[in-house]
Length: 128
Image (tube, rainbow, N blue to C red; front, side, top):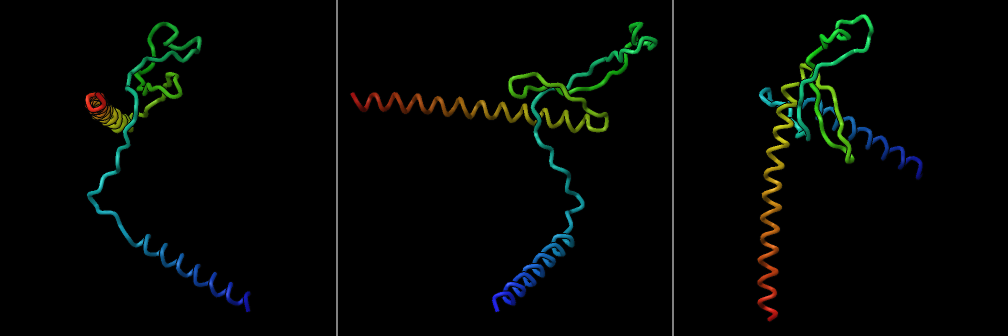
């Protein structure tokens, strides 16, 4: 009897799973929705690169590039990551969004610190 109940409940559950997947597949995103740009820390810099082959033009001083890299700090170390040409504008936008957010975060922190100072001063006045 218990085995039959378990089989029935697993069948019902699998039917629910299938129906929820079908619903999620039929829902479409609006045509005008753009992919969300996640903020990225760092800065974009263009660099010329030497490949290291002995008979290459870069060994005579004519370097390859410019190639774009995103420089950022992770775990206290400066990191460098290559940015593809087709991703360059999106990464620049993401870095600028991060910079704008940092300005907002800093002002919020300063405001909170000022409020704490005022509260401490009021508390000292109240204690006296």
